[in-house]
Image 1 (tube, helix red, strand yellow):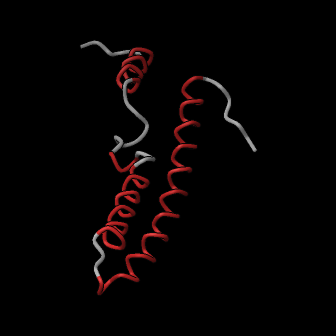
Image 2 (cartoon, rainbow, N blue to C red):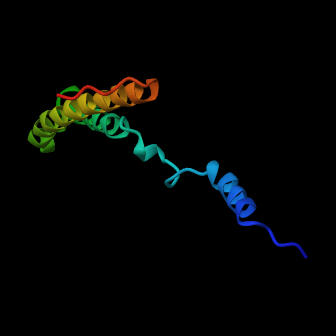
Amino acid sequence: MTRESEDEILRRETRQTDGEDDGPPTTPFDNPLFLPILLWLFTAWFCWDAWIEPMEEHLAFNRYGFFVVLVLALYFTWRAIQEKREDAKMTSGDPPDVP
C-alpha cells in the first residue's frame, strides 16, 4: 500500500473544486427583469379593469392601483436596466461607473 504525498492530495482536491461555483444555482427569480415584468403585467391588469372594461364596483381601486403600480414598474424597470448595464460592463472588463 502506498501513501500519497500531500502535494498529490492537494492537486486532486483543487482539480475537484475548480469546476464548482461559489453559490447555489440561480433561479429565474434572480433575474433583475423578473419584478419589472410582473409589475408591468399588474399595470396592464389595472388599466384593463379601470378604463378598457371598467368594473363599476371597484373603479376607484383599479384607477389608484394603476397609477401606484405604474410608478413602481417604471422605477424597477429603470433599476433593472441599470443593473444589466453594470453586469455587462463587469463581464466586458470595463470598470463600473461610480457616481
